Image 1 (tube, rainbow, N blue to C red):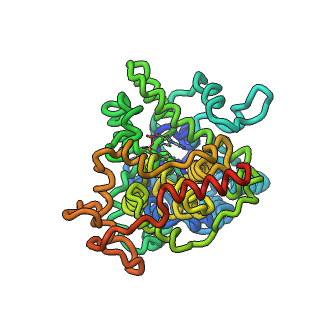
Image 2: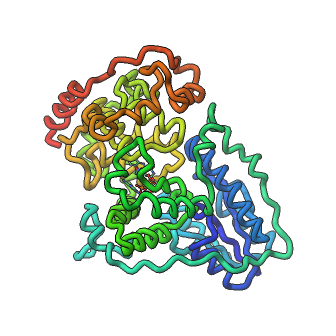
Image 3: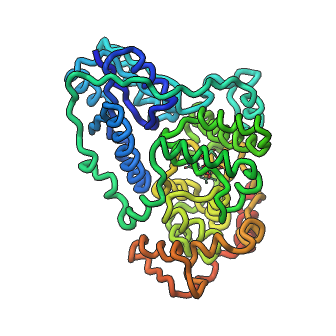
Length: 468
Ligand code: FAD
């Protein structure tokens, strides 16, 4: 009897414990991706990236004589239909670790079991599952460094190879056509431009990891802070769709460390920031939706799209570092980590605007959107999360530019208005944005909506006066 492998954020063959277990059983394997309401609620850039990921994973399976079945509807109903149509006796999947997925998966598991179907979930999306890491007193970690110290020496199993054989069923169930899902429709303009910035699929992700380890990890500590250069791995878009496993990244980093590339330890630490985000999302699901520190509920954040907030969204605050980073995200679907920290600080502190406004904008524009890392990043920046920046840490986007983009290579790449011969990348932005924003590359660059000094004073008054 066939085994259904319900794939979600694990679109790969290598190091896929659920798929490997299904293949090793010797039974026919049917991989299915389900377009349910959680997929429907994804942001525009994520949907486009998902479209590319599914097309590629479908090809990867086809190359191995298998198929990716696409179905739309509530997950349990779709799985029951497939079980009825194919006579499958088991459903396997890789665990996810945030509340909406957990609730859905738990309900699916108990319903399938009640139907007499084997329902098994597997590890794969994390290095350390949240319930396997605990403080000495049995609690969970609320601060990153002790968690890093607790896990850094832990044994991490070697990644699994691709399954040797994926047995096909005698008859394939019907599949939706990917094009009919119209996942790219949510991108109003510029979908093709965004697609050109995506690096899709597990082969590409493995090459990317290899190139990073060979060429860049040795200089990661310095390189990772400079937004103008390619100093980081850029693997976040692949990790979020599971085109590469965290174990593959971890072991590559460990090998680099053993080869004398000391900076690789900081790369391992970054991978553990991702783990920490899921640790928090699992133990305190409210981090995804509400102030993690409840006393922040009293903070009078702006929640409206004021003209200043619209300027932030549209990359025309008049603060070059902020605008460059916002435009980078609009065009490429990613933003350098330094940019993320600066634009988040500017929105929450200079513009005193709720982090949720920023979280939603990021969710709509990032191809590497990840529910846990995005929420943790925003709450860290705003000060409302665990292990947050202290309220008096207000990034100054002007001094940050002097420090991390001394020769202005990054801002020149993304801002057209200040320069007589703007770069193609900067002009691309104007091809993508809605006409209603009324921005032109030959217009004058705007004055700051809030200067760094005004913003800092305002933020310190607002935050400090309330004893945060
Ligand atoms: P590298 O420097 O090569 O790091 C390797 C991997 O470690 C990354 O791919 C990522 O999986 C993980 N990682 C690195 N830094 C962090 C971090 N601070 N938190 C969690 N994981 C980390 N990351 C996302 O993947 N998705 C998001 O939606 C997201 N939103 C963010 C929002 C804000 C406000 C902030 C401040 C950060 C956010 N991050 C998010 C974290 C971080 O900016 C990105 O993971 C990183 O820029 C990705 O680039 P990279 O793959 O080249 O990272």
